[in-house]
Every structure is written in C-alpha cells, then in structure tokens.
Length: 239
Figure 1: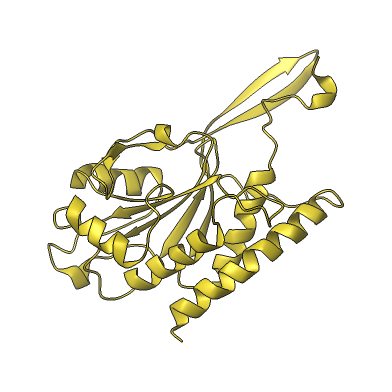
Figure 2 (figure 1 turned 180 degrees about the vertical axis):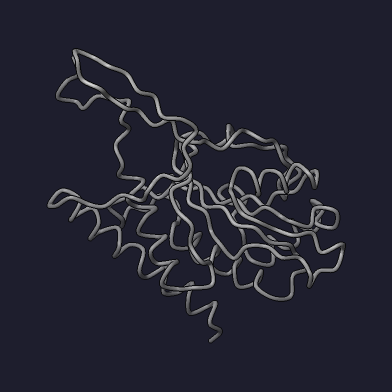
C-alpha cells in the first residue's frame, strides 16, 4: 500500500476519534485554540478609566477565481465555512501528488453529515490554488480532480489570472513562490496547508507532507468548529 493511501486511511480512522476526545475534553478543561496570524491594527480605547485594546486581525479578501467546473467562485460563496487551502499545479512531478493525496485524506475523513457521528462535518471547504494557471485550464483541473475523486461541492481547484493568484498567495496567504518560467520542475511552491477560520483569519500552517502535522490540522479543524463567536452572546444573556 502506498504511503499516500496509508495516510488517507489513518486520517479517516483518526478524525472521528479526535473529534470525540476534543468534544469530550472541551467541556472538561481549557483547550488551547489555534493562534491567529497577522493583525492589521490594534485599537486602544479607555472606558471608565480602564484601558482596553482590541486587535483587528487581517482577513483574506474576496477574490473571484474559476474552479474545476468552470464556475466563478470566491470566499463569499462559502460563508461561515472553515477553509483548508493548499497550492499545487497539475503537471507537478514532485510534491503535488502527495499534497493532493493528503487533502484527499482530509476530504474522506470529513465526509458529509453522518448519523453515526456526533459531529456535523459539513463546515469545512477545501481550496487548491494552481500556481501554473497558464496550463492549468478548467479542463485540466477537472481531469486532475476526477483522478483524485474530488468532491466538487466541498473542494475547489482554482485557476485564474496569474498575477491575481500570485499576489493572493504572497500578500494574503503570506507564502512565497517563484515562477519557474514555464518549466514545471522549477516552480518553487509551498508544501504548507493553510487553515482559515470562519472570519477569514489565518489560524495555522501545516506541512502537507508530514502525517503528524496533518493529524494536528485535523485536530485544529475541530477546535475551530467548536470555537464560539465572540460577537454572539451566550444563551444565558439572550432574551
């Protein structure tokens, strides 16, 4: 059995177990939530003689791109979803197949709502951005997606204008990549998976080639699902 198949199987088995123990432990003890990354500003205000600070975290902007079905989509089309993103190109002979297999393992572990589980797993959406959009057309992405049995409603493979994608990856996801000048092997792109919360704030980076880090990503996905919205009052204080 290939390593990628073993990883996918481990994730599929591990994720429900992780969900159970996190949900169980969440009510029993304090849980360390994934950190937020990159703030835009810190607001300081004085109320009743006390100084309070409020951090305004950097959020991913809404940039329209095209998925493997030919639909123009953006983050606004998946509101209130936790996002797991990675970066690849279909002709990549090195790390991309392994990264896609890791994402496939998460997709299979996070199947749609199941009566046998205590948790609703329809709260996650996967995004794979091509770094070679000139050749990764909609048709090429569709063939690649079908090869990996991608579920099109929960996992988008995205293409679009090259400069738009590169600016988005570098300036918003904060990951470096280098144009290989149309030579596949010279594309330098990241092996990192990026975890983004419902507010579009980056909450973690994980090595998609490392099974331990992928297990940590699965755990952090559940933690974000359980995270309370600070803008909403608890039921105790509602009318």
